[in-house]
Image (cartoon, rainbow, N blue to C red; front, side, top):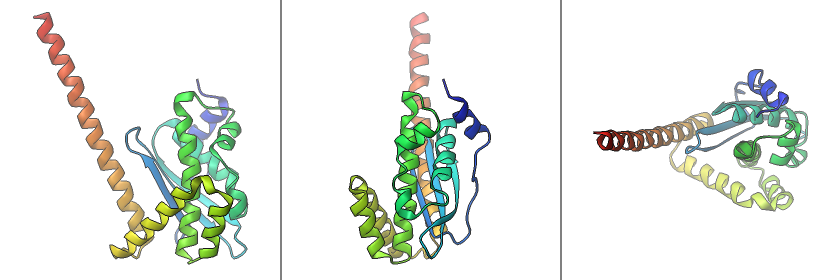
Length: 198
C-alpha cells in the first residue's frame, strides 16, 4: 500500500522535464524491473544546484522517488546533495513497500551519476575525488561514470544528450527482450496446461 505522499508525487510529480545544456546528467536503471531514471542538474559557479529535472520510465514508485529526490537536492550544494540517500528519499515519502525499495536506491544513484557527470564534464577532477572521499560506498558508481565518459569520447559522441539517449534505448531494448522471453515462458505454461486437460 502506497502512502499519500507517494501517490501525490506519482500523480503530481515535481520537476519533470529536461534541462538544455545541463551541468550534469545521470542515467541509471534496471531493465529487468523496467525502471530507468535520468536526472539533469543545473549547477552554478558556486556549485549550488539551482535547478533539477528528471525523466523516468517505470512504475509509480519510480516516478515518486525520482520526484522526491529532485526536491531534496534542489538548492543544495553538490556536497550536501550527497547526503540525500535512498533512506532519506523513503523517509520523505513516509515509506515504501519492501518490494519498491529498489526505486529509492535508483533515485539515489541517479543523483550521484549526475554529480559524477558534472565533475567529468567540467574536468573537475578534484570535485570527483572529493565525491569519492565523501561517499566511498559509491566509488564504483563514480568510476563507472568515468568509464562511460571515456566510452563516449571513443564513440565520438560529443553531445552528452545523444550518449544518454543511446543508453536509454539500450535499456528499453533489453527490457523488450525480457518481456518477450517472459511472454514465451507463459505461453509454454499455458500450452502445457491445455495438453493436460485434453
